[in-house]
Image 1 (cartoon, rainbow over the protein chains, first blue to last red):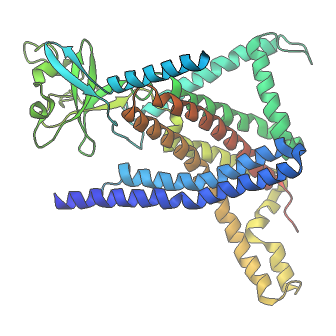
Image 2 (image 1 turned 180 degrees about the vertical axis):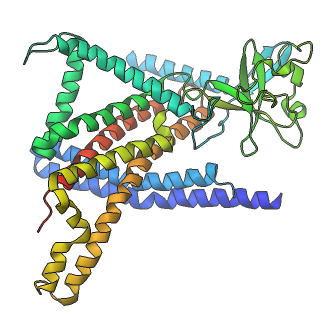
Length: 82
Length: 370
């Protein structure tokens, strides 16, 4: 029973750290992408539609890292039965 | 006045939601309490009957049927249209504007004349991912299915039979205490009318193994687990890996077709090796570049399979979990907001998948430096 408790504890802590810490970098990255796009649009409003596409692409790249962290957290929680 | 109406509806929905989160039904003479709960969250797809028929595969067939049906309607409209004129039906015009918008705005600027080759596969991926993401919004998907005994690694719930269907009450069966003491009603009551002749397994016998006790509730120690009939294809890693492999192979084949044998030069870096040998780059740095860049290119090529598949899977699966968690907090109003979010996520992910195929193909067909 104590082993079971330790397993649950480890899963919860691991998933929490994986999810939480893994979101820091992508958060900064998405913020930077939005910042760059907004500055460019402010200087040169005609490029809005072009920039939006590339901004969404860059955000998707950054977000995919956060999703990796989330997937690892999910795998730890629901698929890991050590 | 509009604002007041909205406020009344909002407060009413909140009250209904709070009331719905715990209620009691009188079923077969016993008072059965229900409450909201987070169901078992299963990462791999689950089999419906035979092993090859996973619920995500079944839903893939339905998604394909839906897409083919819409495409057939569109074809009916486009078939009769003369060259340069509009399609004759609404669906046909819808298809035309959809394809034209994505093709002219995103594919042609990136790919130029090659857009014609890439458009079918990229737009097919877009439509498939979009339609399968929209399946989240269909009622009954991921919540209606067949009931089975919970396996050891999952939680089992008290279930009760109402007419021909079983309902999960939301209370978990304590495996140490057994079904009757955890659920507050007996197995016979869970079966509905206590059947004469002990025919408990009539309702939910599994097709694959009839001898096994496959009824939720007949085993005194475990409860019921739900295997949904319909589950979004893209919330299973198998589907997204298949999509990613198709995209990967397509990109590589396009690169080879465009550059021939020279396509592989970017992985071996013959050019920079020669330049380093000829002394055009200073000393060691040239050799380091020649030795490192090639393998890195090769790795980044294969990492694409992982990033393609995990991005899609993670977004869709995280959406499912998010909606389930919100449903367990407040079942009436809150999930609707997050389903709206899911709609946006589905559109964006479909667009991103299409755009990444386009961009990576344009990188692959670009002439490598000599």
